[in-house]
Length: 95
Image 1 (tube, rainbow, N blue to C red):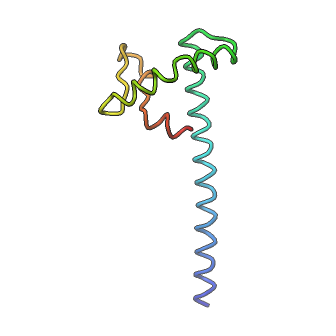
Image 2: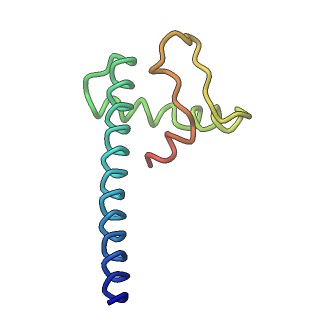
Image 3: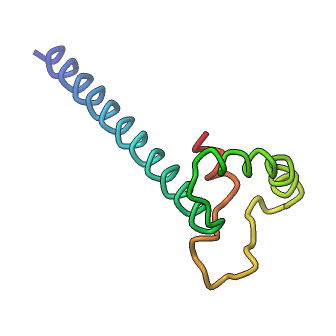
């Protein structure tokens, strides 16, 4: 009887893990969407291909900026805008 109980517990845990992984995936997808929208709005870009060109153009500069920052957090020039305070670790986890 105890084995069935243990097996049931394991199955429950596996289902919870599956649900948590799905939730994690949705959170990451939403974060990527939000960041993309923010970038498009802040750069006033409407065309996706144009946005990709701009991102590629400034990619190395952005990486260097994050690598040179000791705290790992980009401090925005306008701290009153809470949308600008993305951390480097959050953007890396979205990849």
